[in-house]
Length: 78
Image 1 (cartoon, rainbow, N blue to C red):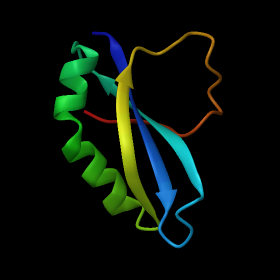
Image 2: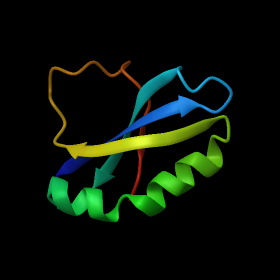
Image 3: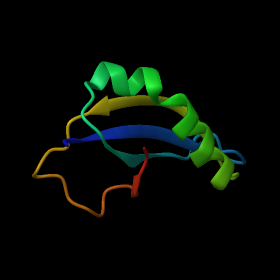
Image 4: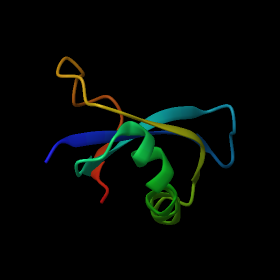
């Protein structure tokens, strides 16, 4: 199976100008388009677990080997 990243842009509820990206890793063999279509339940779960944040947009992309692990939060999703 190939991994694919669901990249969330989340903003703080109490400070909407404070935004950052979070990475959720899908461990399945789907295209980025299929990932975007199936992302909503995972986004809802993440927001439910992080009530101080709200998701404002998202995208899916294949992981890039030169991305550093400390950029955002990589957690399994799916």
